[in-house]
Length: 264
Image (cartoon, rainbow, N blue to C red; front, side, top):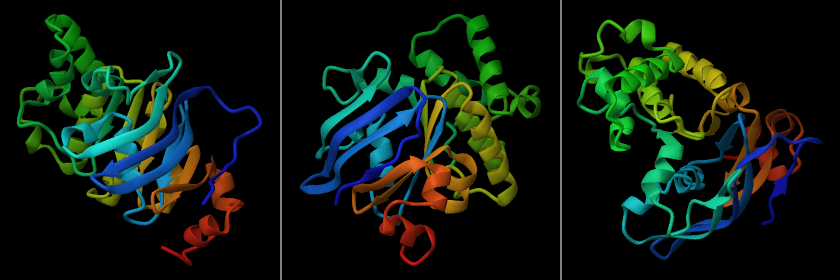
């Protein structure tokens, strides 16, 4: 089933792109020849029914699948402008995860202080300067709109925070290493509507600094937060384009059926 990709007349700069990407869980082929651009400083949403490959595709970008045996990639994911293929076996997956951070479905703070959660990636990189780490922690917490709530309790355990605060802390942790891309895997599905609204607002702000790729089961959320939308089904990319075009004038009937609720 060939995909339809609609691009604007003058697309923004490419930050990453997958080319003929296949992915296998053992013998099962979960992704089938996905070629898709990811534009710089834009939010790209991945939508589609459960089990269509959205999260599988997302996790290819920072090699999360490497953590489990029996998984295999074919194809490429290029990170621009240096055109590094992040799936190349000679590329260090740890360095990939510094450049491409991830925020998961449920908040997953480490059993450490608020400060040490944010500083974690910097310490993994070998950073020793306390003043530098202090500055980066403050900047990351400000970037995640959490500084005012956390500045007087940096030594408190992160798990004592509310769910929404914990998710913003995870975003701060992701921001601290100055990533080029942040991957969000259904980041608000475990949160209440108020916390969801704050995370959506935050995503709109951080795209000024980083490129965002987000999996969401909520089409209204995709319409609210994203600049581009990709519709996936059974491991294939069916249609990709500017969000307003996908939601108002989809090119493929399969996309229209999903968006209007006739399918999925």
